[in-house]
Image: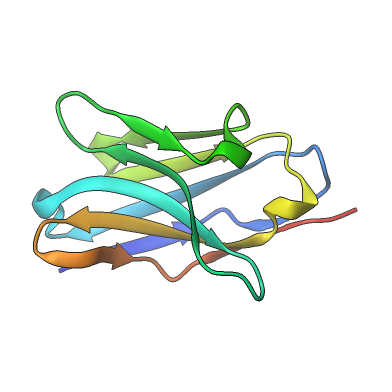
Length: 119
């Protein structure tokens, strides 16, 4: 089992920045990827950014966030971050941390962090 705890959400004005954190605990040796997804009211959950947890790290970003969001990790702290800059109202959503594991379909999920972009 892997437990994921997110933090860092909140209310920010358009053009502002936030950083989300996701701390993983438990059977972290089984994780091969980490990522962030988001779900806005009335819409399906969508990918935001992912990264592989391998010797050669690869990242992937959804087109709407390219150039504004950055995914990174601190392996010593078992933590993955999502730095979000130049936030827009359309970025408003609940953001979920995900950990991919070979034997767990769809991986593990955190509880979600609300991000609201509004003036």
